[in-house]
Each structure stands twice: as C-alpha cells, then as structure tokens.
Image (cartoon, rainbow, N blue to C red; front, side, top):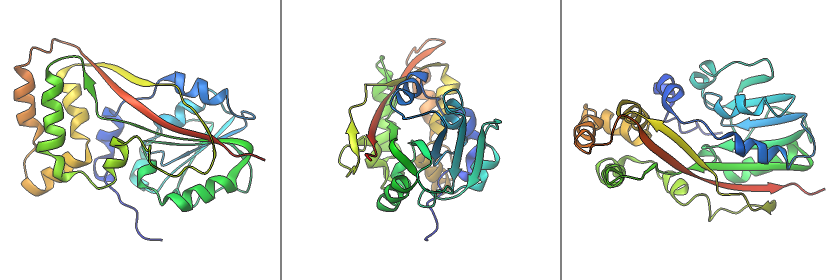
Length: 248
C-alpha cells in the first residue's frame, strides 16, 4: 500500500484544538438506523472528535487513523480502542460492526478498497455513513472576504481531493442501499481569534506557509478586523452526508 497523504500530522495539536465538533443530532439519527448498539467504527478518526461522540450511543467504538500523531493526541475514553491503521484495512473480524463512519475523511481513501472493507466488517443491516463539512459561512458581508481567501489567496494550495468536499461527495459511487440524510449543519460562535485559528488548520494554508514562509492569515486578520464582526461571530458549516445500509 502506498504511503497515505498526510496533510495534518505536523499540526495535529492545532487540528485538535481548533476544528469544529459535530452536532449530536447526527449521532442521534445514525443510532436510529443501526441494527444494534454493540459496535461502531470511526475510520480516519483524526483526533477522535466523532469517536468520543459515538460512545454515548454504542457499547464499543473502534477508531482508526493512519497518522500516529493524530492517534497519540486523540481524546481517550474507556469505550474507545484507537489503532493506527489505514481505511483500507479495518482491524476487525467479519460482520461485527453496526455502524461505520468516516467524518471529514473519506476523500483521502482508496474508495473501492474502503467500501470492500466496510462490506466485510458490517453485520447484515449495518450502516455506513460518510460525511464532510463544507466551507464555513457567515451571515455577514465578511463572508465574501473569507471566500476570496479560500478560492484566490490559498486556492492553488488545496490538494486535489478538496473538490470532493466542495461537491459534498455527491458524484461518488455508493454501493449501499442509500438513505436520504437530513440537512445537518455545524453551528458555532467564535471570536475573531478562534475563527483565524480554525482557518490556520486548513491544509492549503499550511502548504502556503511552507512555500512562502509567512502566514497568509495575518493579512486576513487585518481585513476581517475592519469588517465590524462584533465580539462573537456566528459561523455555520453545511454538512453533506452519504448514508446507506448493507442488506442481508
């Protein structure tokens, strides 16, 4: 297997501190679909944000990621077993999982090999859910400033897989009995520094810094500082999901 594309290990601490968390409504809905609550699997778990959320719904969670740096910084929990492993090699026996998820991760996978592993580890009637959150949105004119930064300032530095997130995985093959997902959103209130800290975790920003040896968010901070955003900024991220069931 070729080496995985690692865009986050070098700033795993920042990723853990500044990435948004997922609404509990996602996990409530997914649990309503699964055949039992014995075992959930979080593939490409990163620092374990979704893994920890799953512990409120499942007796046991197996969480895997190919990055040792991410796993070492993941939040521990007595119901979670973390393991360094790629998405294409899930360390479980056949037909034992009620739910497999990949949160903001599936665009890095070898999709055919991942799907084959999901079909192997899911029990009959088990559910696969893959999702991504798209570019943040503001109900404020400063939204145009952030979109210009995303597309123009650092646009050339996004890896090719990013367009799959922009598309919400909509064009992907999905060989499961598909279930229409509700329209979920991540909603957060951040101050300006928290917003900038999140933007600095973008892989495109990190690649820009490597090439230019300066941080483009410094200039963005100056521009946003003139936008009269107020002490707290209402931020939302549209969530796009593909969800399906493995039929018996």
